[in-house]
Length: 631
Image (tube, rainbow, N blue to C red; front, side, top):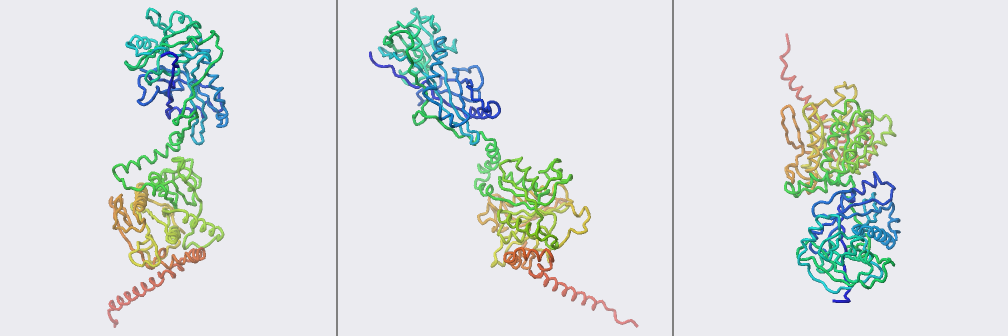
């Protein structure tokens, strides 16, 4: 077998756990900052558990690699260094050949003092913390004297490796040892080299009868220590009982004992077997916002496992919601929407947070007092979940029956409201007064939006969805909040006492109404026809009612249905078409005099007929009640 060159495999294959990059990101942000000096690492190689199909042992790195730790059972610790650059340009400009040679020169110098120190690794890296992408390249330098060209003379399996294994167990930090002529195992160093011609090494290779490239470094050091050595037996110890082997090599080709130069190798190849750096994108794991995003969706996604596998979470997540009113109802509705995964929520309100609000309205704290409600609610929602697209808009919704006082400002509010209605899929009507709900109801029909209405009493509540509007549709259309009224809403706020100006209600009523209004929306979104689904139909989550009326005093809930009233002041075709065609001119007339709305939709005629009927009843009653002329 003479004149056969000794072949080698890579010393190890790196495996970098995600926790390694997480710790690197933390250190870069909080500790290292712009410091690009070399950082020490500690890794481990488990030669007793080389994965099947792998030609060599794995070099494991995780968050603990940044610490100086003790080896676990079966581990062989290996020291290393991290060279992290501040820019991708610096990383790319590194002279990879020079970098590897410099590391090899350092290991040669350390190895001449202690051969066990010639095994180390180095990593060059760049951490892009904006995108949470990491670029890195691992090298385990292996060196060989220029004039050294070992040739194989003989080889064979090692029949009894037990004494070698026992020696390495008692010397966990040693990579190699020497065997004396008497068979004694001694440490490999310069002074002991003259006593032996047998070099024993731990082998990280799993290829049959082919050692790892670390062999070159140890043989070069042995030849450096014993220049006149011509033949040497190399013993390679592996974890498998039948896999350890020996090789007799001729090293006489070296002329002189001085180091004339080193041949160096060690950069790791990628999965395509190319000598190039690697890149890993861990944004979904390292960015806390992505972690929060995944955590928020966890409960929702667990529903699909067994409980409701057909539920469409995507339609919920992509739905944009406009909350008209940022008080008690608005705050609770927003929280439930967030829990369902809704990501775009806009608050509308023209009030400020008062000192009585925080205890009843969960998006406000004491420090919120005095701030605009809509903006404070949006800010609070983003603090809870930063990825939510929350906006607060301060405007006064124009109210029917409230005459124009500043037309320029009210036109601006109307146009902004119309813009918001068009930009969102769903409207929630959560205001205090009936007249504030009128215009959003009309606009919701005109723009074909889903409208959810929630209203509170002292110990009762109403949750309902407004029906869809089609001009040609006359029968069986679901009604709106105003369909049971025979008068248009008007100014109900003037001359009100304090208890009438505030929503006086039992504290739990708002939570019940808010949760059921959002659950109603989610059920609507699960219907293939969305809001066109009838109140008798069912979806994956259950019923799809029109109205829910709750009575807390009796702990009772009723599901009701109301068809659209042809003379409704908000959803009759006359009103909706008038709003579409005339816009602000129509709204201005309604604000200045609610009677114009009653005239348009036919309520004035209904009232007139009702008065005529009542007069006839009273006339007949008066006739029947006469006792005759008194004498």
